[in-house]
Length: 426
Image (cartoon, rainbow, N blue to C red; front, top):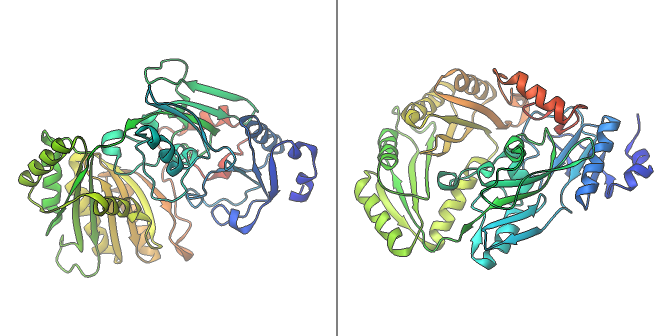
């Protein structure tokens, strides 16, 4: 079998952009790649994927590297295709509230650029250095999902590099676009298993003129769930409604948590923001504390990052919004049955969130199995494996009835089966 030195000496690799041997810092799921290629143009990216497919080399597309531990641990990674040189805003059409940006651009850098025209891309990541390509590939979203949705909801156009060497485009540069197949939605959440994102066009929003958050605390989760139902059924128009529930060994009485908190954020004109926050404080039963300015920003930054604190397993899950009381009860029961500490960070009205499980290996495994068999939650995916021997959990769970369709898509877009080195859902 050819080595990294053989590949680096070949004329084919010399034409693909910057290439170098892989190092320990390039590891994907604990596996160090033989070769790292950093194309500088879309054409180089497509040529690199075509070469890797021809050589049958398992390939992982990497942006900021913030989620390289997500997905199945790979047994072999030959090539990492780094998007670091595909970096920058291609076009900001501020009059149309749209922007086209290359895949390797970080969300932080993009919003810094858009802010010059009083606009932003209302997405969040729990990781510093998260890139646009990575956000699309994982469909990662934070509390702003309540109003704006996920990356796939804001995406109106995309350019993809395929493993046959082609560059294909879908969508356009305006919000009301109906041309062609919506490949952007197809690859959103595909974990890089179908194609490489080269650039993407998003619809933007104006920067928020004012913002205020009510941080509400509760003695028991039932009251929290009740307030979520009140917000959902009211005339209030929050920007985000997020919850945080922590249950652990110190909670000796059933359903008495260590932390039970609801965050309700309003953002519009200054007068409307103040009026909405005041109405919410009068309507909701939790003990409320208002946050604005730097204190509010710090509160939401912590909320976005909470699932990734510590070393425990992190599970992503979803549920019907009306099932929230049952979800909170399941989290409490999991802790009492399996021990350890469980922390749920969730988009309360949407019905989606992350559960961090700090427990021993049997406790983690039993908890994941219970969640998948509960009938209350769905789409239970293990995003972060626990350290040590507890690793090796079934990341994606049962394939379900969509498996034949997913396999057909994989065969169509990546017939050589090289992309994401077997880490993704297909």
